[in-house]
Amino acid sequence: MNIKHYEFHARPHPVSVLASGCLLSSVVFFSHAPSYQIAITVCSLIAFVHFNHNATTMRMLLLTAARIVLYILVLYALLSQVPGSHELMHWPWGCYISTRTLFVALGAAARVNTLLFIAGACAGIVKPEDLARGLRQIGVPYWLCFLVVLTFQVFDRLRYNWGLIYEGMRSRGLRFTANIFSKMGRQALIYSMTAFLLLALRQVSEISISSNFRGVDAGMNRRTDLVEYHWGGIDWTIVAAATCCVCGLFWVAHI
Amino acid sequence: MKRPKTYHLILTAVLSGIIAVVSYASAVTTTLIPGVAALYPAAALEIAFGIWFGLWGAFAAYIGVLIAGVTAGWFSPQVGILIGLGDFMLAAIPAYVFRKMNYSCQLKRTRDIVALITSSMIASILGSLLYNWVNLVLGVLQNMKAFWLGVLSWNIGNLLIVIVIAVPLVRALSRVLEKSGFTIKGLFE
Image (cartoon, rainbow over all chains, first blue to last red):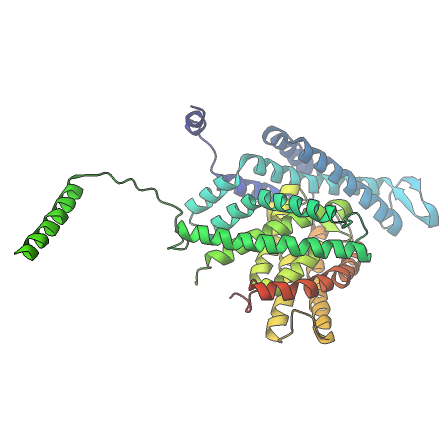
C-alpha cells in the first residue's frame, strides 16, 4: 500500500532536480552581488532544511561555515591585505582585522555554504537508484548509470570489510593510533591496506562473475529479465511427439 | 566507442568507494578550506591506483572524490565536476608515465622512485593550480597572494604524502597485486 501511495504522487525527475541545482549554484558561483547572495542563501537554506533532515550533515555544514570565516580572518590578518575604515582587532607583528575583512570572510562563507545547501537539498531529494534511472531515461549510457549506483552500493560492503580488518589487525597488536609518519604508523597503514585491497579486489571478481551471469555484459542495456514460462499446448505436443518417436524407434528396432 | 567490460566497471566502482571513504576520513581531520586538506593521505591511494589500474584508477579517483565531496558537503556537484579533474590528473599522469616509459611499479630501482615522485608532483602542481583557481573565483581566496600560499601548502603536503606513504605503499603492495593478477598492464586493458 505504501509503495502504491508513494508512486501515485508526482515526483520530480531526478535529472531536473540535479539540473536546477546546478543552475542555481552557477548563479552563486558567478555572482558577487550581496542582494543575490542573501536571497539565494536564505532560499537554499529553507530547501535544505525541508528536504534533508540529517542533523549530522547540518552540523558539518555549520562547522564548515565557521571554519571558512576563521580561515579567512586568520589569513587576511596575517597578510593584512584588506584594509578597512575601522580596525576591529590588532594582532602581533603589525597585523590587524578590519571590518571589511570580517565582511569578506562572512560573504565567502555564505557563498560556499549556499552551494553546499543546494547540493544537500538535491541529495535529499534524489536517491542514487532514482538518479541512475533518470539518467538512463535521458539517454546516458547504461554502463555509466550502473557505475554510479554500484559505487554508492559498495560503501556498506567496504565499511564492513574495514571493520573486520581493523579488529583483526588490532587484536594482533597493530597500533592504528600511531602517527602516520612514524614507522609503526606506516606499518599499520600498509598491513591493513594490503588486506583491505586484496579483499576488495577479490570481491570485484565475485561481483563481476555474478553480473555476467545476470547478463550485464550481454548488450549492456539491461539487467536481469524475469520471464515466466507456462506449460501449454505446444509443450504437450513436443512431449507427445518425443514419446511417439521413442516408441517408434523401439518398434522399428523390434521389427 | 568500445564498451567497457563489466570487470573494469565494477573495479572502478569499488575503487571509487575506497577513495571516497579514505578521502572522507582523511580530510575531515585536517581540512583548512572546505575540500582542501593540508595533508591529504588519500592522494597516496590515488597515485597508487593510477599506477596499478591505469586510467580506471584515475576515473575512480575522480568519481570517488566527487562522491565524497558532494555527500560530505565540501563542494556542490558542478564545482566538484571541475575540481575533481585535479584528482584525475594525480592518478592519470603517473599511470601514463609508468606505462609509456616502462618503469617498474615494484620500485626496485632508484629511477622508478624518482619517476613516481616527479610525475606525482607534476600532477599535484597542475591539480593545485586548478583547485585554488576555483577557490579564487568562489571568493574563498581573495587575492593572488592567498592563491600562491594555497598552491604552496598543497604541494608541500602532497610531497610529504608521496614520500612517506605513496612510495612505501606502492613498493609493498605491487608485488602482491601483480602476483595475484589484479593489476592492469596498459592504460585500459
